[in-house]
Length: 224
Image (tube, rainbow, N blue to C red; front, side):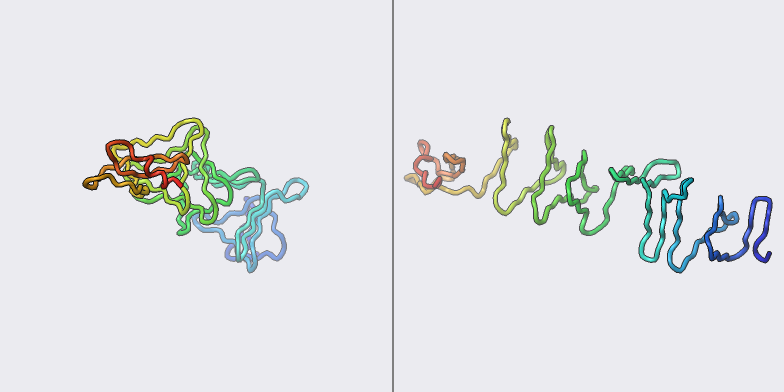
């Protein structure tokens, strides 16, 4: 019947086919070596029904979006390894590496939980909260390590280091505090380039020019 042939395996259509009503079939396949195309002026909808003709899974490809409805969505490799899955409870990325190529990076409106955050080799890692605070928490400690470069912490107002039960340790061959305020005391004789570090009662540090004895008490005005 024209392009329609009845064979032992079912119906065989040659060329383009147009169906004006729903088509029910157990299997639809193209000829070996040829692609199978579905064309529509609006969208193509694929429904998976149960025995009561209730839609369980639905795939809609339209002119503006591709929508999938179901209890779970999975993407796997040819070998069956899970690459991506999503359901009502969680979204899982099973690939060994997740790369975000957008110029603005990744935005997390809520919290993120991960054992490791690192940049690509020879690339910078930047964690930023433009309008709010950035909090990093871990019950057994937070480690920030720069093996081949500098580490900088910059803020507009106060930078606070606090240890509730332990201590704060600065372990380096050289420790520089270039912007500490200087006291007004000047010993007699030539001006020296040696200072002592003084601590106020409120914890503020300042420099006082060293003398024969301690000169911190003479410069207590700095603590006000």
